[in-house]
Length: 414
Image (cartoon, rainbow, N blue to C red; front, side, top):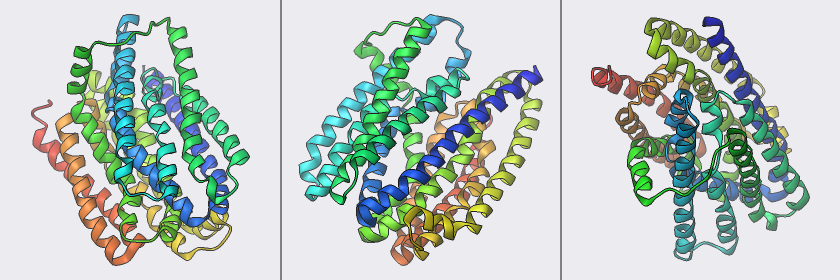
């Protein structure tokens, strides 16, 4: 049994690491192309609108990446799997269509320039692709090589489109369009394969089931939304205080910083199913397992951060084709975020395996409020450097507030 658990962890961590390596390599290849072809101002705009669209995508995901993998892992019959998959996908698709039409209808009220209008409108296809993102299925089935494979094909398709068609500043509106289109095609093919392999049947759910599913995951949805805001809303906050040129230089460093921030997420996703099983069978073994993973995670994230700091100057040069002191400073600060984020690893595992929805909801929104206040203040005073510092402060705040609310509610979820 112990060897089986170790094998699952190694397999999951390897596939998630491979997936993250693909993301890093893709970022290192595609970012210099976009930055040089589009310039810092257009690069900043496409990054800003991508962040906004991904924020809307969190609503479309509806929190099912948090609790559906555990359910899939425990299901024994095809009927249970089919019911969950069909209902989740139906809910996501319906929500994506509603948000898509709402977003299109309000664009005339946003007072956007023609350039901004095109970038925003053509980015909306990402909403449809995120509605059918199959990540939750692969995680629940402990089949994370499917994540890596689909991600590789998606990124390769996207890269070919970018290299072929994005040559000038006026092509900026194509960048997010190609991103969403590539993902939509690949994810659709994945689901066709999954349904055929599992011998599942598609059907549209009733309005009653839709409402029940909406009620079921409202706390996880709001928590996911808050979590994304606290991690990825820095560009939105900064856009109120700096020009597009500085926004682009900040975004250049943030591309690497965001990938680094995924290290604790990767570790959490690797052990979540194992922790769920251990929580049911042997809680003493669970604590020992989490403590060991926690220590290794802290050391690994700190080591990676120090490597990035040492080579930050050359990383920025590679990404942009020039030495940009501003971007280097931002990258140095952001490289420490994974270590401080890893502090909250055990808290997040406990929250997820015990489905402490209310705790997750409260803590994430406290962090959002903290970031909005301290982030806006430091952005106003020090620009991107101040905002980067506020992101680290938010990770520290997140650790303490999660500790407090878990202890406060531990008897309720015992």
